[in-house]
Structure formats: C-alpha cells, structure tokens
Image (tube, rainbow, N blue to C red):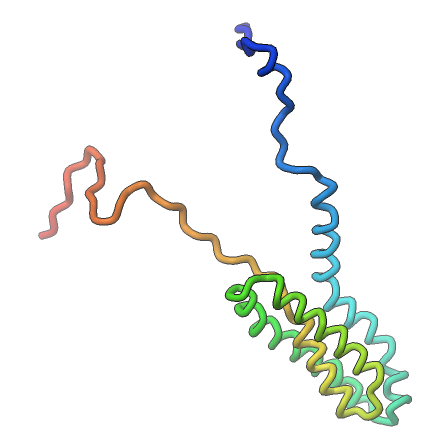
Length: 162
C-alpha cells in the first residue's frame, strides 16, 4: 500500500473543500420554477370541476362551456410556439414576467366575465400567457483548438482526391 502525499504547509491543509455553492440559495429557484411549470396543468385541473357552475351562471349549453377549455388549450399551444422562440431571443426574464402579468389579468377578467364570448376570449388569452415554457437552448458544439484554414497536425498523410 502506498502512502498518499500530504501537503507541505499548514495553510494548504487548512483550506476548506471547494463547493459549487450553498444549497439554501438554490431552493427558492427550484420552488419558483416548479410552481411555474405546474401552473398550466393546475389551471386546467381547478377549472374542470367548475364547468357545471359556469354553465349555470352564464345560462349556456355544456358545449359552450367546453369551448372555453378548448380555447385555453389552443392558447397554450400557440403560446408555446410564439413565446418559446421569443424567450430565446429576448432572454428568459422579460417574457416570463410579461406572461405572468397577462396571466393574472386574464384570470381576473375570466372571473368577472358576464357573457360566454368574453369568457372564451379571455380563456384564449389566459392560455397564450400560460403557454410560456422554459425551453433549453440547444447545446453548442465544443470548440476545437484547430484554427480555420490550417492543416491538422496528425501523423496521417493527407488524403488526395482522384
């Protein structure tokens, strides 16, 4: 068995181990991102049991109340198509805060809607604002150390074309 070399100075031995960062600072970020991810499905799950009351309050058929859910789903699909690439160009923060503000405003207007047309329109806007998802940017290829235009320094002979 071989002995591991020890550091020669007491200052090197007293250095604390290198860590990536405090975990207590990551917890709020994880909670916020988890809440934002769950917001869209939570909105649908809370809205489904209320469909009979919406039908009774607005004096409309069941098909019209289901149209509000369809408008929300169309809005989420369009929101992901539009806001996803927009957040890649503008950054994540601005589209996220704008989307959350519109989402809260549309929620309030949905709650105050007096006729089905306003409710359907606001549910579409609600879905558009709720459709902001956090897309990961595609990973970039690793950088190589070979400069453009220079030949490779390999020992293989150059390939000649016929």
